[in-house]
Image (cartoon, helix red, strand yellow):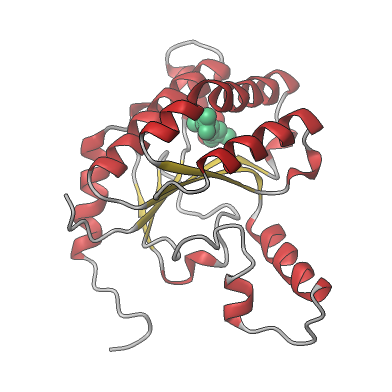
Length: 227
Ligand code: FPP
C-alpha cells in the first residue's frame, strides 16, 4: 500500500500484564508475547508503506516495577539487538533507540550504538523508546541547545534536537489496553497527532487492528488549527 496516508505511526504497547494475568501467567510472559507481536506489527506497518514506527517499550517510570519484570524486559531488548540486526539490514530498517541511556550499562549502550551505526543508512525507521520520558526528552533537547550556545530557542530548534529528529512527527498514535492518556510519550511530537485508543491488549494486537486504526485516521479531518 504505497499510498498509506500515515507516514509515521507510534504505539503505546499497553496491556501485556493484564493479558498474562487473564491466562494465569506471570507478567513477564505477557511481555515475551508482546515482543513477538511488536515484530509482527512493525513488519506489517512496513508492508503497508508506513515509513517510520515508534514503540514505547520502557518509560522513565517503569523502573518502579519489580526487579524481575525490569530484568525480563531488558533481556528482551538485548536479545532483540543480538538476534535481529541482520534482519533489520535485510528489511532495510534503521533502528534508533530513544530515551535517556545514562542509566544503562556500558555494555548495553555499546550494543545499542553498534546496531544504530550498522543500520544507519537504511530507509525505514524504527524508534524504540527505552527509559523514555517526553518531558525528559524536551529538557535534553533544550540542554543540547544551551550547550551549543543558544540564548533563545525556536520550535524548529527543539524539533531538530528531540530524539526522533530523523523523521516527521507521528501522524497517528495508537494506544492499546484502553487507557485514554499519553503517559509522557512523545510530548513534543504529538502536538498534532491523531490519537487512537483500542481496548485490545497489546499481545492480542493484529494486522487487522492496525487497519482499523488507519481507517479511523482516514476519517478524521486534520486541520492543524485551521478551518
Ligand atoms: C505496558 O504494559 C508494557 C510495557 C511496560 C512493556 C512493553 C514492552 C514490550 C511489548 C516488549 C518490546 C520488545 C522489544 C524488543 C522492543 P503493562 O505490562 O503495563 O500492561 P498492564 O497495564 O496490563 O499491566
